[in-house]
Length: 374
Image 1 (cartoon, helix red, strand yellow):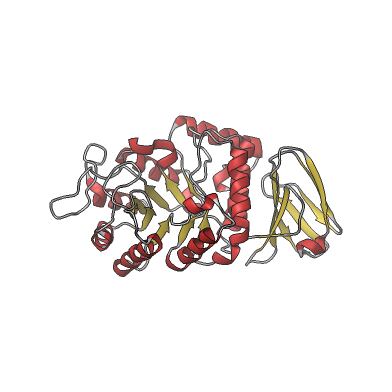
Image 2: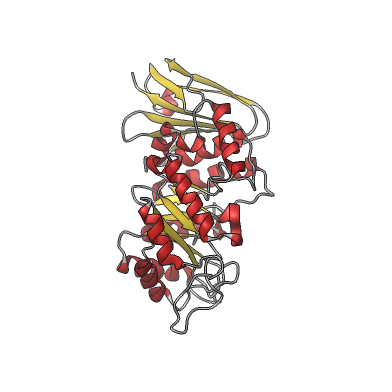
């Protein structure tokens, strides 16, 4: 759980932006809720390495350097993450890590970096990408066994989620990384409904690869993001799907901006549940490391049940189609005992179910419930 600058600031990010979001995580209480990682994405580095081949920060944007930034973030009780690519260049033309894996791993460790995100832009031809991503992870862990390794090896193959290549890369990633991207990058020109439907459909079959310490990553959470500017319903749906599938909650927004604060406040009022990101039940569902499983065939309607390690269940109902639909699902199909209490995560409305449960959802809507056995 944490924050990444990319979808809000892109290549315009500065150390001031990073520290501003870090302070906001603390002052808003989100750090206490578990949002601990402050992640610096692409474009943080200078266009060239030093004479010794060492990475260095872009001076104009990070005049005090990354070790200084790490110390400042650590003093706030938070952890610093950083971006690189496994190729010769990053996606925006900055020095990649190819040929420098071990050197960069040692550099990041010496700087106090706690999390590394590895992209796959700028890859040379005729290389074994899976082998290179594995090697980078081994080099990272050699110098800092506790570092979090986030990588994007499977994301391009996700265009064909039923293909053998995609499943093979997810399997490899699950053995070498802590989290790995299983969807393409989110895009502000693509409707939220399409992004969320694709994420749910792609990730549902991948539950066996996730567990404590390693998770399928559905990309960033857009709550408070003023570039994408998703509706309240879309933001709630994204958080619900990400939580049910145990995807890391890495928000990409400028939480300290007045526009984002107002955005979050309006969503909180609309849902009567406080800040969306701070919903305690949602966080508990997400941080339970086991993914939910699909139950039965209901066309565009998806019913996902997640047994919680603390007892009870989380149940997600998602209408991935554009039309309003109604379904009725027996408790036996969901594996939930009769008499359990169902509490909506967002509205807090609750009911006891003694027989089949009926849902009526508009197009692209979701419901998420905490279910407590009687």
